[in-house]
Image 1 (cartoon, rainbow, N blue to C red):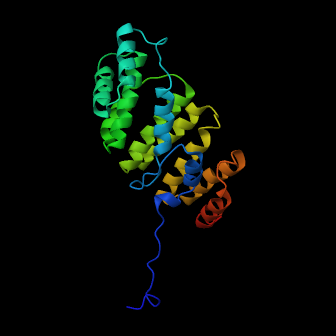
Image 2: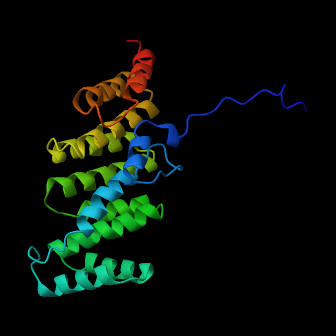
Image 3: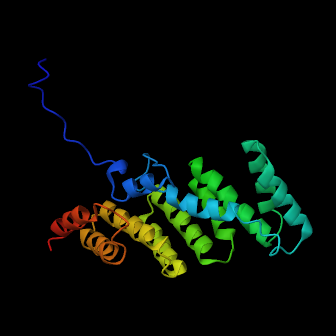
Length: 221
């Protein structure tokens, strides 16, 4: 067959073409997971990087839990470290135990075990707007991967509340909402989220204007 005369199959929009991915990659803080309808690495980064960067010894209620989480943090073998975190997560309700639950949830998420991840996220109770918002984001991503989009939206909206106008988190929450609304073909709501990003966080996405325009047209504005 003559390659020049062959018809090209229309290119389907992929995850890597979703707005905001370029910004995330440029910042070097996330990788794209092509298997899901919205990118989700940001939530893992927010939760794990922050949680992993804090030792929590001054918050924990027991010396035993602190020592256990400290040893898990230092373990180099991934499988052993996961089992250590899981043991801590299942044994107690102090800050160290709650942080272990987040770490276990992150592991299950990367394994595609979203129901298991949600079980541990639902039990995690940590203070701090960045951590709480990150937990909500990761829960939303789990629901999105399970195609429970309404639940995902609820989690992303909760993340917006917990973020307390933190400029490092707010636009990510809005972008995730926009992507889910697009998946639901709710273009009017998608348009609203892009408008918020454009007006409140204009430097977040260099190409925000074209996504605002696309959603505007599809919403019939």
